[in-house]
Image 1 (cartoon, rainbow, N blue to C red):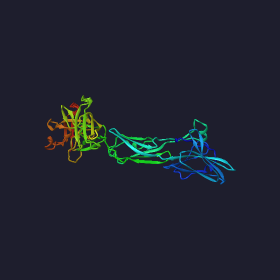
Image 2: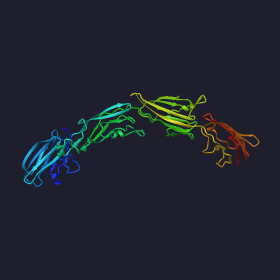
Image 3: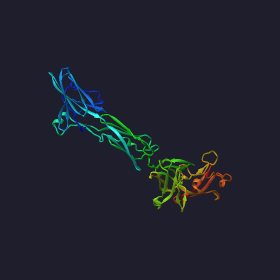
Image 4: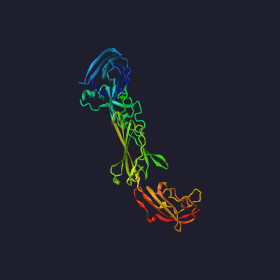
Length: 461
């Protein structure tokens, strides 16, 4: 019989309606509508038979006539006729709508109810495993999820349109789980596959599973019955997952770089690692140059490794050579990882923006006090205003008579400043006025050698 039945709109008192009941139902749900007294929906889990009971409210000897609704033609089939008793019962083995007529010298009243045998179960879970995701699909008995539409008896009998129906949704909830933490170590993994509404399947794809695991599903149906199933096998993890971690060199040590794109000044030294990639055994790196520098998508560097995934330190082109780090520009680093057993691959990228050179005259102090008190003892660029992305500087300091008191030519990042000693190694230079000339060249080739980088400074002790 189809599982589509009607709600009963019988206008009977509460006390009378209570005279029809079922023996030990697993769930009881009232029918719902805007007017009239609701009847009961009796639900039995994993059973094939049930008992309905009825009695006369005054204990009068009555005739109990039991009928079952035939929804195909809206007729009633008598199931049992029992006269001269105060109570009666009916053994049933089929879903459907049931009515009992209680007739005696005081009244002739009918009571109605609905009965459902809920034998829903999950038969199996089938897995469909691909590089871009795992699909899990369950099969159930019954094979198709059914909604339960219930109508008023009188409406069912007299109105072919069956308007005003109320529907129990086929399933209330579905919950999928995995036996292992298949996304362990992955930040921001999409876990929505665990809650799938009323779908027969779920897809794990962002990312796909990265550990082998068995899988379970629990379904709660419209009547509150739960059924569960766990795969008796483990589903292999075949997908690879690429993850880039980076460390930038700063203040004499490597520090975690979490920005994407990373930002800094030249010469920006960074090392990349694939150690947080998952389920992979081969790693391939590519570093792309800055289109604004006419490098286009030139592969500036590449590296291919197998386990263990060692850090890689990139280089970039500079003055017809290569330097270990990045000069000003925009860059992309791409990591592709492979699971050679399955043939699956995954790629990810991170970006770098290295600022152009900058050298403001505000960075040059006009005095310092090399007296050994630990404060302002060295002539060097003002903290917080230092030049950016400058490769090379020349610093010349002259006395008032024109004698060269100090000279430095070399990398900016290696300059320790002038400590006030004659030529950096002799006796202390006398207090007074000195003159400086500073030239610089940025990692982007910009020259800083105009008159604004010339001036005077004072030594006070």
